[in-house]
Image 1: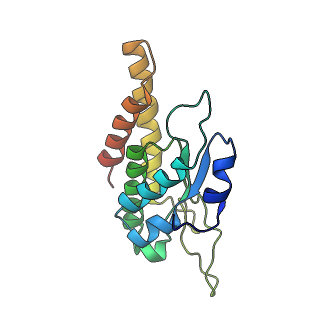
Image 2 (image 1 turned 90 degrees about the horizontal axis):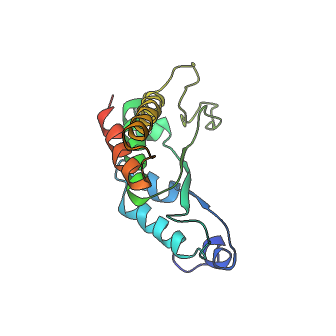
Length: 173
């Protein structure tokens, strides 16, 4: 975004990709728990560099990685709170996909301790955000099924996003 030589500035404008994955750590981790402006600015910037792609509508930049090491978040509950915030911000912006990093942590510090990027910890304990995602998917499937039954069509992207944001808010641990 500062005009340097990089994939976004020097490759994307000349390709016809379907989607672009954004590893969001540079905008989310300095702002723990305050998703929004910095993340959206980066997503907007990347999206602005994409050539149109016939047949694809909507936003085409997705978050391919986001997460918070337990050491930085301090508690598993804060980690859940931060991850919910990023998830809601991504839904509001229009990300077609949002992928959490990671199921089991494979990153260790200099002393051999896990950094805590996980949904299931090194003691095989499911973390709060694991339960958030489990509930989110259950409610999402139920919402879509009920919507289709009632209206004889699937929800639009906008209809689903509004409901999905509610699911992330309602299930706070």
